[in-house]
Amino acid sequence: MLPRSTSPASAVLLAALGIGLLSLMDATIKGLSERYGVTGIAFARYAVGTLVMAAVLAALRPGWPSAETWRTNGLRAVLVVATALCFFHGLSVLPLAEALALSFLSPIFIALFAALLLRERVRAPVWAGLVVGFVGVGIVVAGQIGSEVGSEGPRAAASTWGIAAILVSALTYALSMVLLRARARHDPVVTIVAIQNAGPAAMLAGPAAWTWTPVAAPDWALLVLVGVLGVAGHLVLSRAYARAEASRLAAMEYTALLWAIGLGYVAFGEVPGAATLAGAGLILAGSALAARR
Image (cartoon, rainbow, N blue to C red; front, side, top):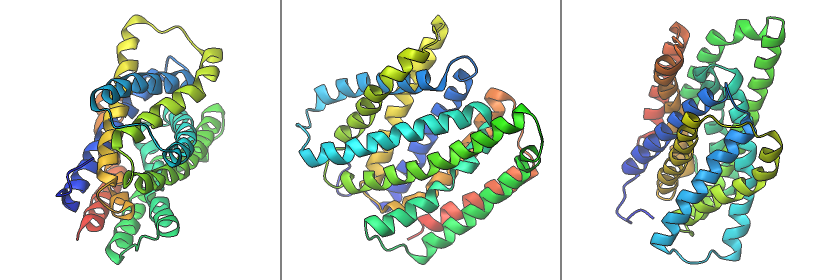
């Protein structure tokens, strides 16, 4: 876990770094989804993560988890599977920036769940930052997907289901992050992340076997990269959530849109429009406001 001297500002920076690593993972998954099924990619992501965390546990020896740790983090594993399958499907049919923009309902849900389940007091600057960021998300969504949703044909239907999947993933992700905050004050970070990888890998093994597509040799490296980035991102995020309120860190999720704009352009040639850039500016402003003392 983080040293006790870790400041809230450091926790915010850690959250931003973790989100950046996970955004790079998302871009890699989007590229792989053009050739492989979502279930197989998700299984590979958590199987690799399990192997990495097994090595980490062997080195650090944090001790055997308690029954309460198994119960709570087992529930988180179910939520992680739901989040991954829904979000990866959305990534496969939507542009990267659009998918990330839709997922930004999760900070609102995180703040609400933190207040309801953890009894955290959500301060006025946090609410203001969330609202500003949410307005930015609305601008991005209105500018990039409004016309496509109203169109006809298979592409429009796929986009509609992709949007629905992303919205469901935002809800399950928010609940899993609040449960993470609840256990991060009691359990070693490495234990939390190990269960977060081993549980989904076990649950996805059967479905992945039925839908598995042979993987080309060069793509194995990308699948391993997905697993490593997922572990690294969640280790960093777990450390951040162990030292700052979930509601305070929620708005940092919005910075993923900035990563998505850059990665979407470099990897897929997706050029953001004026609405995306305007929304990104508001998202940055909201993140800065919510992260203030």
